Length: 140
Image (tube, one colour):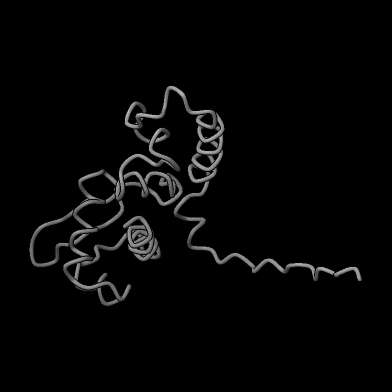
């Protein structure tokens, strides 16, 4: 659900000062109305969106897009971020105490988490130029 949450948040962030209805978000993003409503409620419950009731009600960002990281969206939608069970839920894995790669997974998780915390919603609005891969020459 984190990917849908990110799409919904970027859609709202394009016009951050406006209230957006669940129906409008569903149509704009191509997500079904029930799914859009569920996502919007989850994001609001986790403090990323604020909701307004009434005829002109809907959702708007709870804070500026520059203050919302991709990590916060993932956490809101899917719970604590973790590449493995032991990095998101310490003590949940019965192999944890004897695992020879746990510390490496924790290191990898910290690097990825740190990167996701550095990417903000306003950055997600800006397109990134595609990376051109160099041709690999095969030796004969």
